[in-house]
Image 1 (cartoon, rainbow, N blue to C red):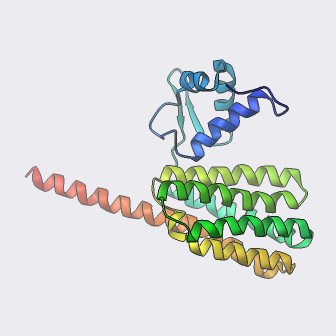
Image 2 (spheres, one colour; image 1 turned 135 degrees about the vertical axis):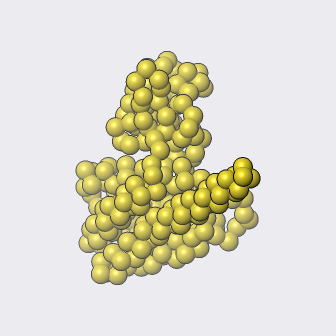
Image 3 (cartoon, helix red, strand yellow; image 1 turned 30 degrees about the horizontal axis):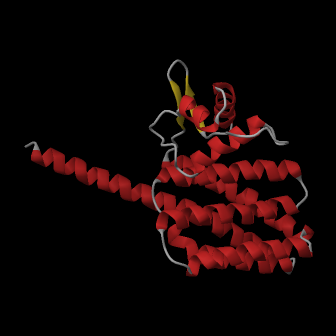
Length: 240
């Protein structure tokens, strides 16, 4: 059961449901189980329904009147287009970070990068590794957002980052896993550029870092479409 803390019960429920979406626990084609979530958390239906409505406004959930709520399904093109916008937002953040980062911020970024590096060289369990990397990557980017000192920019970019992670979860492919080592190297390069206050170097690194995810999503989409066409062709041949 969730406790009523300073953050508020509603915020805790919202964060729990959002985490389920980011971890891929809630499947795109399966209705969000309002009652089951409420029972698991020891709360009434109302805070869960409030969380679902908020997540719908943020682009994570589709609400179908008189039917129910489902994790939102995005086309591959929609995901690619979104990541183009998200990349530019992250570029703005890292550019400002190069101007405003203090020594404590740099130390925190380096600490998170060390943890990511341990994932790269550690034992491999793909599902756990993907989850742990996503959460550390989220912390890394959140640190960049927060050090800027602009709540409006940090909050909006955080939501975009979570939506991007949700799209990766719904892609049902090892999007992050294939670039884990390269992504870690990009993080280290970003830290070095921020520490040197070198926005001219940091911005293109950040853009590539983000867009590489959309490139992988596009490739996975093409592979699935090709496989589907092949299967359709086989079915037609078998019916002749």
